[in-house]
Length: 233
Image 1 (cartoon, rainbow, N blue to C red):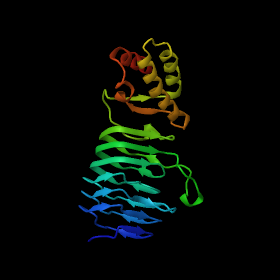
Image 2: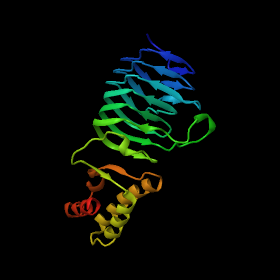
Image 3: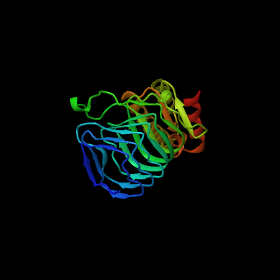
Image 4: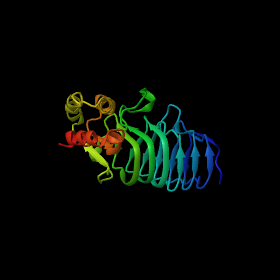
């Protein structure tokens, strides 16, 4: 069954979007989608939580889907499955994710616990973000901001990532050391990168989960090691 590209204010149980190629799909304005199938769907642009009234996705399956420049909008994704997905260029500023599972590739994705725009129709001042499993996902340039509780998620492990507890203090001390570096290119680059992370803490993100490559990819080997040593001390 093929659905229209604009779906507003509906209650849909078991809808089948599987395998469809949809550009600028718009779902929202208080819609409620339960156990809907988005497996292997290819979505380009559009919004899954359009309008001012929040939309809910309950136990929906996005396995194998490819989403590019799709806005989650004002949506709550609850117990949804995102296995084997490719999600790229997604800013999740007013959406919630609760008890969802992710595997596959997430690239250039931002999740925020603080809504970008607040009004009474959103029905919340914080985006719930808890119980999500990213442990089997490949995260590239993925940011958690606005007060996401990282302890309430399952995150990837390994040498490629750092979890900085109480990051503001660590980064402030790192800035002091960076200011003494004799290599201007390394000093400038490290100051920019560390400043970006400090901005995240100022916006309410206490702990930071970051890829080590974000810190070091443009630094010379000696200064890359020096920065990592300071931050992980």
